[in-house]
Length: 245
Image (cartoon, rainbow, N blue to C red):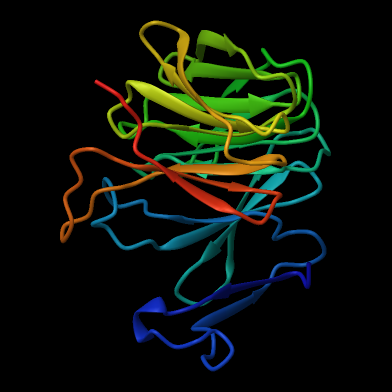
């Protein structure tokens, strides 16, 4: 909330209290609510990021140079809403954002053009997340729904119902076959995309679940069976080994 974006070198293994940031960007009032690295030159984690995207309270996404912190471009939704959610596609070609209000926006990273808008939700959208192949977008909303969208054609795919409170987070499994979600109802759910059904429900949290994340492979550590992590308002992190096919 100090209006500053900072980039740290975690490879030094120093405490953030001891280390100095590699880059500090004065993003202006409420222009750094969420931030994501953007790699425009290729696919996946092997390509170094060259931009930082940050969300604002005015319906815009701002892009900053990772080299010198200069402003590169603004992506404007034309609606002056607080952008709670921000995601960059793994191939770096698309940026999705959403927030106060029920709309979800997908932009072309390089051209800065609005590619498509999804309006299937009826309340604030808390989370947006791309599939590993960058073709699908998962969204979670205060309307208790999880929705899956095809960003190639700008069309809805399916709606998943089962949570009994705001859905605060949702992320697709690296294989694309499952979606994990967390909610104010304290539950973590895993959904089978093909069946359009919940296949697992976990009740370890005692308060709202604010984040879920699947384990990702790297060049050094290939993962064949990703585990799932969740973080809750109860100040706990839980790990799961889902019984998935």
